[in-house]
Length: 261
Image (cartoon, rainbow, N blue to C red):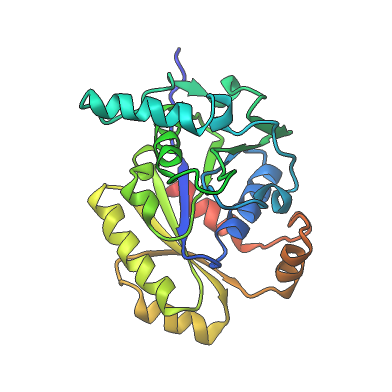
């Protein structure tokens, strides 16, 4: 009998400095310990240290470099636009087990993939990376017990690029700032437009901050959990070390919520 491929593919968004990469890393480590198979997709062209806080090596290539580099992908994208088409369609349907070790590095049941990075000044916009992210996520299929976590660039540009098309759930990280609240409320609207499940994580909080954040967020938004400010996380990030030593019990509640969603 053919396996049924199911959710979750999760896109993690938020403003710069809200804690997106930290959340992705901690959730991935918790899922790994729980026996799930996880692929972390780094779709942020400017983030250079996600693999370090995950505690995993990088592959020798990004997905984009494996396909010939940014110019090759951009040319393919232009060819499609000229034909009046909208999808890149570089990939066929594939499973986690079919991904090449040339661009995915595995540490037991935890994998890490970079879509692409800005390598040189004046190389142009990051649109090809957004198109590549969308096409990859549209074609990667997962089965029960497998998760994909997508760490995105700051803001909501990935919504405009259509990256959310290939995911099932959007989680926005909300830190104590007005900008984070505005961004979460706008992201919720965009997620609803595209019929995507949406929730937020309140990050770097205490009881007072948590209450204030909840009062400012759209009342229809699901709050998946809260994470208190941790000086230990701050120091590990500053030192460029893995977050493996950090354990937060609330992640079990977050995982259970997503599993039952």
